[in-house]
Image (cartoon, rainbow, N blue to C red; front, side, top):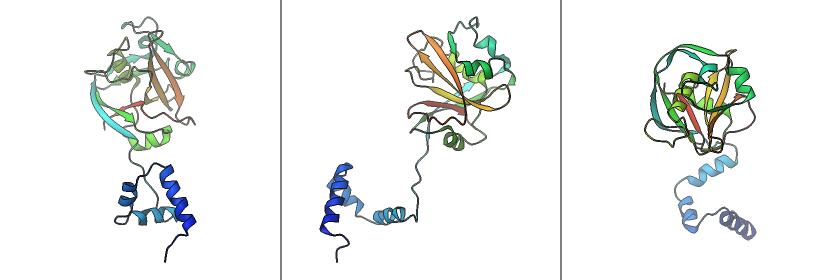
Length: 212
């Protein structure tokens, strides 16, 4: 006895075609217990767990700093001659910060594989990897002062996509700091958002974190 009426079979056929499935796909779906899994999800007996959000593609050494004065590093008269545009939030929450005894370490650079809010990204990184010092981000920017393309020891995107990290502000709260290269006015843009921002990051942006 068929589990579907002819009308239901036609509806299913249309749905499969509308979603791009081929006859070969249907044949593969019919093998094994794949459809058992589908049934369990439909009935609320199981959930679909997506793969990881982050795809790590590089590890880089950073030297740290005995004393890192943010307003000097990111100011208009910085010794490296890098041109910056700083948002009001970055100025308010980071420009007065001084980081001391920042140790040399290794950083991991990841690509975000699909759109996500900050919460799930932080969860995947874990408390031991999530935060970095602002001195580290500055060092990475200083390797590409004029928006040079990615290459040896140069890992930041300069194609208009953001690179972001989780960094403590002056008051100790964790913020999202992102930077991107603007090829029109030849400046590195820096902005900051509180980590509970309701706006998701787009697939393809980069995340810089601790390795471990």
